[in-house]
Image (cartoon, rainbow, N blue to C red; front, side, top):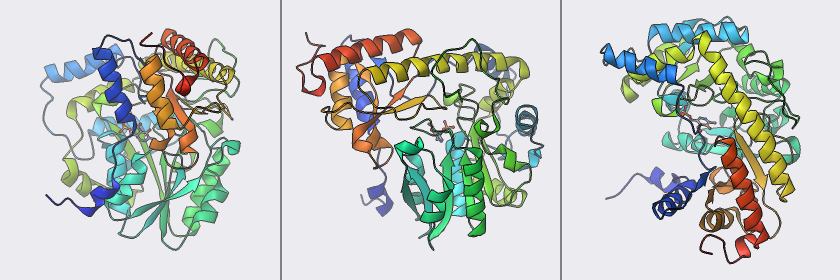
Length: 416
Ligand SMILES: Cc1ncc(COP(=O)(O)O)c(C=O)c1O
């Protein structure tokens, strides 16, 4: 059968090979340490699961409005008020099928064939493919490790061309954990506006930010009370700029990846078009997921979310210190998300060879940089640190043993 030409340009994640190989090892009885997946390892907090179960018990199983449950849209607007000091009209909030649903709707809303979308490299892989679905293309801006991999205003103004229609930026970023300074976000937004384009800020890791220092401390500044440069773009939403879009999700900070609920905040004038698109693309987001998400936003659950963040902070510190001690280069301490994007020690082959070999010989699964772009991708790997702390310690022990045996050049440990 002849598939559409676009399918020649849409690839599965390279990490899926690692996931398949990890499953084979597990079937043989090996205990694999998973640092490849970009999601919390523990299940969604119990009160959220109970809220989902209660919604099912009440028979909440019908479609909702394509824009989402009005109560959830209001709760999201209230969350911005309570945690980010932003007075947001709930009519500008659209609940979506994950941030992925939001990115797809916005791509459909904003892209014409032949348009170019500016993206950092490395970046979240799906953002390269969404433009393809609509005949547009991604234009990559190489990010510099010396800049902490953060996208700066100057990158965007230098890269903007006649074909460019907008820029997509995640802060905190996947795979680097980079957090952009608020001044850069403003400069990027202003640049897009001055050129008649749009700026899409993906804040799916909002809330998951940590101090730059690697010393553990008993508590962190609570969500929403971090320094302004750490809270993302929501400050500019207050003015309701008509070229800015914000994407967010219950997947990461709220620990709800499998429920498939995200949201976007869009200029008021675009909401009817987004509603039409959502109706046609997927009718409505999951009803039970939306009821569970409502519970996730209750103020009394934030201590649970924050406890998870504190655990990630400690894991980040341990992992950055541990990787550096083993010869990996982590140029700047990642201040957000739950990833460390590290350059391989010398002599360890390409990132794909390294990941395959590390899994086969030491049963530690990590993601090759080639999933995230091209710039330095063959030399970098992404470690996700959402596994329990003991697993991280074990992963570091296995990495030390693996490298001590010669790493990709060694004869291996597992079979021994
Ligand atoms: C930067 C970024 N954006 C969007 C997504 C999609 O998230 P979801 O659809 O689970 O909300 C991810 C998932 O890892 C991501 O890393």
